[in-house]
Image (cartoon, rainbow, N blue to C red; front, top):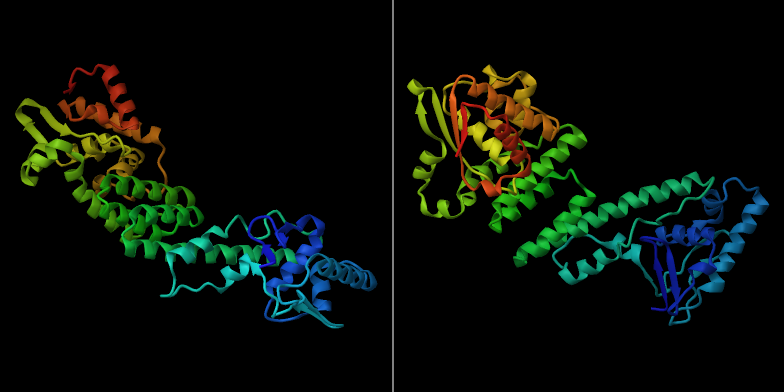
Length: 396
C-alpha cells in the first residue's frame, strides 16, 4: 500500500515509502486523526472547526481548515487506483471509502474475538501497539479533542487486552505454556488487579509443575491488591491458593519428599517431640528460598498445632496480624484478618517476639532442614535470634 498511517505511539505517516510526518503540522495530523476515527461518515466543516479551532473567529477558523485540507492533499497523493485520499465538498469532509491504505488503529477497531482468529493474525495486531494512542499529543484550547484522545486511549488499551486474552486462549489450546505465560504477564502489566488473569497465571504454573512459582505469584498479587486497593483476593483466588499450598509440601521437600509417604512426612514435619513433663518443644522446619517468609511461617505453623499454647497468649493484636499475614492458620485467634500490606520488618519482629516469649517458658529446639535455602527475610530473623544467645533456644 502506498499510504500507511500509524497513530499508536507517536503519530507517523508514510507515503510511497517516505516519511511525510514532518511535513505536516500537529493540527493537520489531528485533522487526519478525526477523519480516521469517523471513517464511515463525513464530518461537517463546522464540527471539525469546533474540535480543532474552537477559540478562533469564524474567518480564521475556516481559513485554518482549508489550509490543513490543502496540506493533506499536497502530501498524500492518489492510491494505486488513482483515488484521492479525501472527499471534500462545501459542507463536509471525510476519507474516500474507495481509497486503499493501511492504518494501525483501523485494524484494532475492527477486532472482535472469534473462531477464525489465528496466532499469526493476533501477533500482528499485538505488534501494532507501539505506544499509547496519539502518544505525547496535547492541543491547547482544544478540550473536546483532547477528551477524544483520552477516551480513545482507554478504548485501544481495552482492545489490546482483548487481543492478548484471545492470544492466551490459543496458546493454551496449543499447549505452549511459555508463550501463554509471556502474554499473561503483558496483560497483568496493563491490568495489574485482574483476578481472572492472576488465577489463570497461577493455574498455568500448577499445570507446568511450578507450584512454588504459583505460591510466589499468589503472594505477590495479594500484596499488590492490599497495597494498591486495600483489599484481599476473592474467595475463588484464595481457594485456588489453599489447594496449591496443601499440595506444595510434596514439592518442596526435594529428595526427602520423594521417599516419604504423606503420612510419614506429616508425622515428621509437625511436632517431633512434645515432652510437657520436660518443658521441651521440638519442631522440624523447612526452607524454600523462593518463597518469602516460608521458614518463619513453617515454624509458626508447627508451634500453633502443638496445642501447648496459643500465639495470642504471647502477642498483641498488631503482632498477631503480622504473623497471620504469613501464616493464615493463626487468623482464628484474631478479631480481624489483616487486609493490608504488612512490612517485612513488622513480620520479623512479631516472629522474634513469639520465639523469645515461648523460650521464657519452654526449652525450644528448632530443627532446620535445607537451611541453605532459607529465604532472606527469615534468615535475618534467624540470625537475630542466633545472636541473642537465648539459653532455652537451640537450632539443629
